[in-house]
Amino acid sequence: MQRTKISIIVLSALAVAWTARAAEPTSAPKPAQKAPAAADHSKLMVYWKESGKEHPVASPADWEIRRRQVLKGIEEAMGPLPDRSKLPPLDMRSLDEKQGEGFRRLKIDFVSEGTDRVPAYLFLPVDLKPSERRPGIMALHQTVTQGKEEPAGIKGSDNLDYGSELAGRGYVVLVPDYPSFGEYQYDFNADSYVSGSMKGIFNHMRAVDLLQSRTEVDPERIGVIGHSLGGHNAMFVGAFDPRIKVIVSSCGWTPFHDYYGGKIAGWTSDRYMPSLRDVYQLNPDRVPFDFYEIVAAFAPRAFFSNSPLGDTNFDYHGIQKAEPKAREIYKLLGAEDKLKVVYPDAPHDFPPAVRKEAYEFIDKTLAYKPRSESVR
Image 1 (cartoon, rainbow, N blue to C red):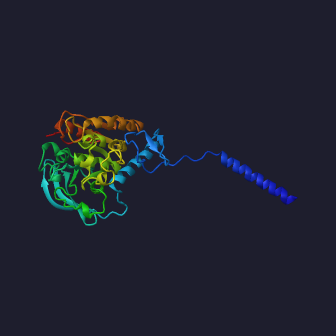
Image 2 (cartoon, helix red, strand yellow):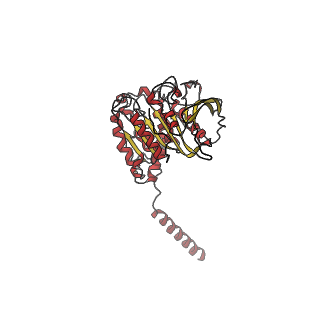
Image 3 (cartoon, rainbow, N blue to C red):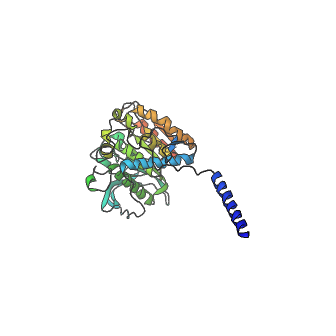
């Protein structure tokens, strides 16, 4: 009889526990690692659950989920960002030095990975006070044979020597070659990368490592600027590297559907993303990321875009569609003033007035008073 009573009590307790557990709310579905294949990448105020269902972005925490999904989408197209936990020494070598107006220009190279060395110019201000640290800027070149020579002010368009102009303002400036340009001999078919774009991101993160390693540089005040090829490479590295506090892209982007009317073959060379051809069949609907998301991924960090009305590569109409959508994310994060897009009446170029505006945007973001404000 006693044993029967005990059994009834135990069973009753289990029943109560089971009822209580059943009454508990089920845990929320986990967010997906990446957007579903049919996702509309222009819709920024949502993220996706594992089921593929949309969930509204209503808070900074929600946006951080979507931001991670954005980076996964980029990696799906470009290949994974290599592990940075065991990086080799930078082993910077100074190969030559020239004196400029207010700066020294060092011709250098440094280790990216393995035996791969990146040729670059490093501009150092001559008026540094003892223990003073200046902001550091990475200046990325466009698609020109001479590579880094142009933003360094040595050979090319005066409108694109933003590296030397920023050095003249007193910044520490690093101007690297992109693989296969300038002095950087590189075989994309012999490396382990899915895309040249991801190799570029890795190299440019190593360039940030170099800037931060310099005693002349404040490691908390790092920026990047570029035109055309350099403009979207500035955006790509800016999306992955939170150490970069301000990103300036001149003539560097438009959403894929607005790039030559959705004809995205120009993005598929070995230097860029062959998967857009080989995996996604040149269909912008299938590409697992878009520039709407990249711009939003910068928030709350500062972004300046020079998007001329006469740019025949990167249609400004697409940028005008993307800007207000990205601005919603900046507003969510309380950083609306950190997003600036200008539409000058100009061709695929970086005119003096717009460069001046971009430099002042950098100055303000990095809390720096320039030594000189001249623009050629």
